[in-house]
Length: 228
Image (cartoon, rainbow, N blue to C red; front, side):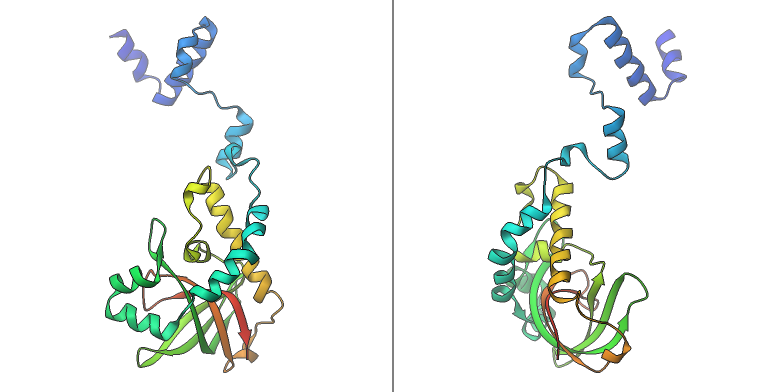
């Protein structure tokens, strides 16, 4: 009964901390198997979005090794003409995804190439986008194209097909690689462009990636981007 009364007045985390401190004061080494004491500095890193386990990983160096030797050639060689891909996805998303896509624990990701006409330029936020229309499936298909400077998502990382989670220590490193790939793509083809309403009506040629969430709301992340 005394033990139940004690637990009643202390939330579970507090009980664990109290027991850990008691074990340490009594010098009980066996308790180390049950408790892990995280230094305050590391705890702060974890709660603020950092990670003590992410120290030593250099996302820039990692992407340096694969960007020109693997990512860019893969983008060119693996990209499927969007009209072909879109038609196949409309007929059977399952078959087309297995044939053309790459899956990394979630929706399928695809590398594609296309031309389209700009219908709107959206730069109200730093995650800027274009709206374009391209011909596919017997009609005009609207697409959203990321133009940054903030590029979101993991389409490039998961679309190339050769980067796997097993290469990394944790999810943070895996996410860092996706961010760095997005940054490289932006710097390569988008950073030097001026995006404003004067571009409406112009044609763009894009090679990039997308994640298949909804076929009628596709968002393209460009790797190569040209205004014609």
